[in-house]
Image 1: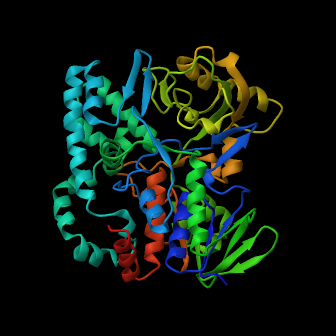
Image 2: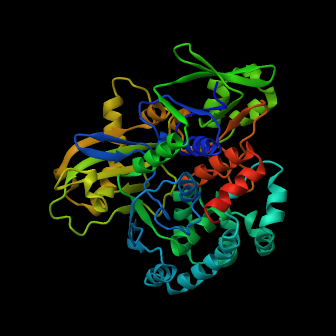
Length: 502
């Protein structure tokens, strides 16, 4: 009988499982899909290797990065080769294109070409947030946990950093919008900040928590912007290697049908084919909605707790476009782009803001010789999608904003296509096993907090983007750290942190 079962091999689940294995626990990861990685998995078609989800990374090749994922890889004695680049991308607004540099001075200089006063206000805005980032630098995420032992840990090992954070308590509890309102009046820069918040959290500045943007600004200006050679799947492979290196197990095609509960305590899981695996601890990497409405019986949870949890608002799903194209004549192509079609429409309106990644710019092995691989996506509501006779026609129609966005970067795109895959919210929901294909909870700043890993059921824990600290690869990696550390004595975590010199 394993010490713990982890449901799902997304980044949060793999981090929790591999860390527990590193601590000496007998861990089993059950993954429904035939490929590990959840929303971060890679897949191949006709010689093209595609990222299914995240494509922006930072700090993978920087030993001093605060990225929780990098810290976990160090603990597991694994690494991911990566290629550095800058600018990190280009934002294409209706009125023109804007390069986004990791270096803060170059970034503000680019803004100053559009609005000199806005660049000065942006510097004030960033300065407020970077003070918070500096305070966080002294408290490594790999040491943190989500139980009462966090208090003696912080007071005993990180008191100087706590003192440094005290003046920033107001910012920690603020939204980015509140800080923006105090420092930025320029309309163009306010729209820029809204866009960057949306790319991080799926919400505008008013709904995004300040620490999330502070971490993003701090890392991209102080660390290395890089892309993993082999794509996002290389990160998943490293975590799986780390899991197995420390004697953890991964079972693919093992669909968990139900979390077994007796007298308010977890007893294990039942797989779709009827196999029951017993364990005193179960960690769900499924969303809050899938965990509480599909994996558990209604009577397993207190009724009001269940009702409130399932009422958590969700960010919409996506349209995805995966393309293989001919690369001739595209020697100066860059890798990341965001296209905003209209300045008069909210950035979160489906089809208005389109995200584009062309990772073969950095790693040519992701595509056949003379070709590029493209992943483009935009928000799309799940409601109204059915696999009926009109499904194919609707896919084509709803993907057109993505094609138009790509034509801003590659005007003759359609003549270059050799492979085309269109994904809908139904695709997103099916392959990622995510309720309504959602991107994650839309918990706006000041309107609630992401819950921690604990649940009302003894022995049942949760990780992933519907737990603290929220959405994004660094955040879900941190959720796995918080959970795993909470399940072992403080001394074990301290020894591991000391081992990697943090």
